[in-house]
Image (cartoon, rainbow, N blue to C red; front, side):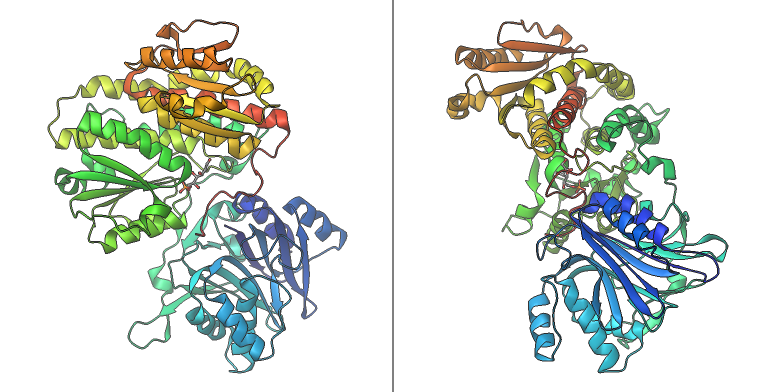
Length: 620
Ligand code: F6R
């Protein structure tokens, strides 16, 4: 969940410090409680670390006029040890300096062994044991830097992407990955070479990327990159550079810039019409949906499945919950949704004909990845990834894949990833329905899908009214979100958005469940947000609203234009366009995203980087 960057440039050419800092800024979404940088200058390390944001680190680098041709840097999301200068990376052990993203599960044992061997620890982190271990292999075993890193990696259990420098050897950076993402950037015109947790950090310099695989170790010099991995037979390192192709990243640097928006979350909410257009491009001009949009073997696989199990976390799991309604009602296939962190440790009943669908924006969520591996270990090999990052671990783990084309999502609160996931899941529903010979009106549903961007634009036009509501929310401590049926997961998503960025405690309930407990919470201080589409459950929902009104609760209702909900003293109403049928959840989530955004704005919280969170959760 941290971000790492490494850069080495030609001597007469450059200073890597601005490159490292710029890279860290792009990775800040991965963690932002502290940051640090280390370079080699005059045969020694110059290291600056500080608690807080990269901007603070940048100022310190400028004050100290830090320059060098080689360096590594880190932005942290604390796991082992509080956010403090001592716990911030890089960590140094004599001549060795390391940055690390991931978690070393056996660090206590390694730490103990190293302490017994006389190594003194300065921090509470698991990372420091990596630095000492490399140092140990360098000095006690006299290994070259590459071999010392390799030997160290053999000892580590857990997840890591590391970058290592040796102050006596300022011509090389060694990087290695196991279960945490790591990408190499090949500099243009011999300018140098780079590595980072994600391509967005490297686009400032190059779009030529090499995606490292688990077990890869790479040596970066200013003019060369060599990649190694352990040979299965000899157990020795072998050069596998020829197996790792350079890929040209299609990400434009502008895609990771804020532009005219105040926050990435706001930008990403407003990008949703375009994100949907891009995601739907795969069916442009089609009158039906071919299974092949999920991969070459999709037709065979999808025809023979008997049920669906969706695995995901957080917002992605909410997308799965919406899909459950679609898959069961339209394709009429049994569908379950399970939180990945629960599924991976549960004794479940496996079924080899069950389609395992993993949903993830980042494609790196540790629990989701582990859940897919767990499902496969139980003999369930029909796997589909719905994911926003092309080269991610989750995409690579699954046989079938669908890439949502939301573009980079930087704000910690997921928005455009969610709506594009819903589009992908609706396409899956249609394909499953066709595979099971269900009688569905393809042209109408595809037309509705294609019209969604226009419909979303209309909902985005409600921004000012929603911002006014949000101002009334800002002084509340709690909120309830209600929905029914297909829109219950949308209520869950609205509550999650509000709590994660505004820190207002929010809970969602299926509206019919209110009288079984939560109604006791309702009073004048408890705003109740209601998702009220004009569907077959509307009358029942209206009865639930009466239950709230009768107890003095204050209702904030988002209703379809034709839902005929009446404004009263305690019932505030914002009308969406007319009911949008099965796809209505995709429209109804938009005002809830805006409500959370403006509530956070009114409260003055850090919208894009809410406290205690990070964007991609690559640790358990
Ligand atoms: C909430 C949010 C998280 C993520 C969750 C899964 O706004 O962003 O709940 O949805 O951490 O992440 P991905 O989709 O990357 O697997």
